[in-house]
Image (tube, rainbow, N blue to C red; front, side, top):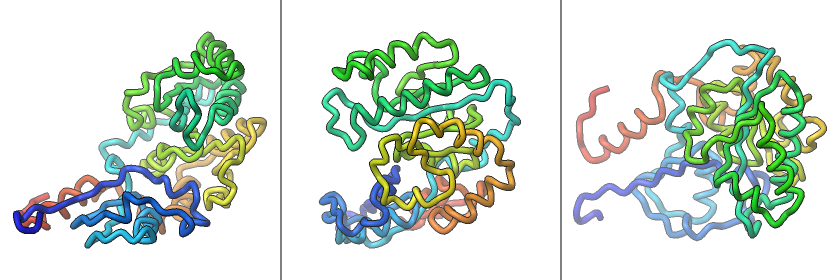
Length: 276
């Protein structure tokens, strides 16, 4: 690449390191060990720390917020407490349950959502990473039956898994993600309310568990967590970000967004003039 003046770039659009924040150094991914890019752009500083702990050999590591954390994607409309729009995001799922969150974890998440749809003032939009039919054809009978029951509820809406998560976050009042899908970080970096659900407490060592009302570990507490976040005003939400996420992702500033920074860094590196 160098001989042909090619600039190599990696953009990492996830924050998976949150799963094992407190024992990060015990893990190692070969994809980072053999990385040798001119630039690596990561969501937050811990992602960079993890890449370096895997002995990555890239020249430059640059932290960013999600690319769509900009003023064009902000929707600050006041929500109606009589009909609160909740978007729920699952983590990866497959019929063999080989991913980090297995079928019983997804079952707990759906059980928590079932408690929400029993409340008349909530409407839940559910987006999974894979088709919802994976639940309906699961070998886990409880998961299968619950998914079939949920889709009959008028205030439970299944969203196509290819639909834009950002658009759903924009149009919702609050979002809930399974541990630890990147959508909650995306939402908070957009200035939107969001928290995690880790129903079987699979990741107790994550630093996310140390943040107030940020990781719900029991479905019986889901409404309590939801009420807490719903009742935060804009200043409270900003204080939560400033105290807990600013150090990792930078200021909640939408004027100089991540997409602009990414373009500028790449174009400047290949000696182009780029006018904003």
